[in-house]
Image 1: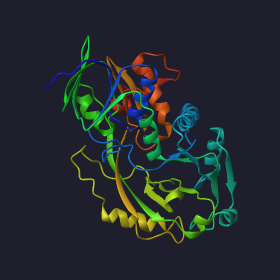
Image 2: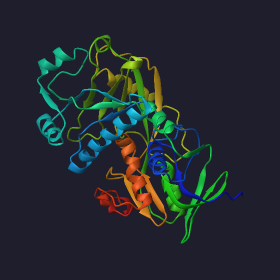
Image 3: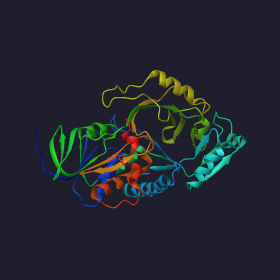
Image 4: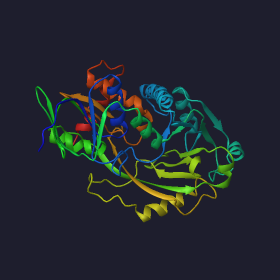
Amino acid sequence: MVKQKRREFVVVGAGLVGLGTSRALGSLGRDVLCLDLAEVGHAWSGSKGNSRAFRYNYDEPMLNAMVAEAERAWRDLETASGLRILEPTPFLNFGEDLTGYAARLAAAGGAVEYLEADAVARRFPALAIRGPAVLETTAGMIRADRARDALRAGLRAELREGVEVTAVFDGPDTARVETTDGDIEADQVVICAGPGTAPLLRGMGLDYQVRTSLQQVVYLTAPPAAGAGQWPAVVRLLTAGEDDQLYALPLPDFGQYKFGVRYSGPEVTYRQTPLDPDPAVTRRLVAAAATLLRDVGSQPKLVERCVLDYTADLHFVLDRVGRVVVGAGTSGHGFKYGPFLGSLVADLAVGATPRWDMSVFSLRRPALTAG
């Protein structure tokens, strides 16, 4: 195995967090090498795809305050790249306890409007759902494809695709990264490898409990009425006894809607489970789509499966162990934080004092170490 020159920082993973961290470290003038086992946005990447939701809808004030920081970071990235990444998009929420949900959103600082059923029908005639709704007007859609392009274009770091990291070792004087392209010594290693993070941490003797599951989505032609007016995202809020949340995210540039069920799908073994779409799930999603939007297409334009890695309490992992920093467990709702999340991981890597209470993101918290 060829031994390569020592680097100041080696970032493992070139998804959203890895690229954001590399960009933040590079902007500080640091020596950064970012590695990914395949091309950016590959099949096993949690950052693949073309769209994500952006919302202020957390119960915890700190997380909503971090969303505000993230919005500023997205706008800065748009200015630097010349790409429009964050698209304003109204979110319509249906379900039980709408007044309580509206109060929570308002407390988070979002602009909220409660609509009676007749107002919903007038303003959004393409909807199949009938009933009152809570409208979020400060929400948006993130163009994930443009986000990856913008982060990569502004990268002041070396990016190597097609290089798999097989092990990471932390030593008293240096860290070592074993790869399919040779061993690399580093002052610091940042592991942002999505579902590939857990195997690397286990190899270091660190117990990291994470869920890795498949999420399947379908893209259907939007109803004519939606194309003629404003394109809302539609979310069916969870009710008592339910464990899924159906959503529809608009893609006006493509004349389509993306439909999925949040945190659904089977557990998978990283890079061993086939990622082929399940026809039965496709049929269920197509049928469910018609309960949200009238006259939506019934023949999918695209069916995708993506891999999510998330923790039992749904909080991220942002922590440091020796010379190794971990930024993981971000699938499902982490994309909205974008380059801001990368800046937090970069702060940990350079030893800067965090501006936030990072204990909730600890690798050692009970939710991650319980059997």
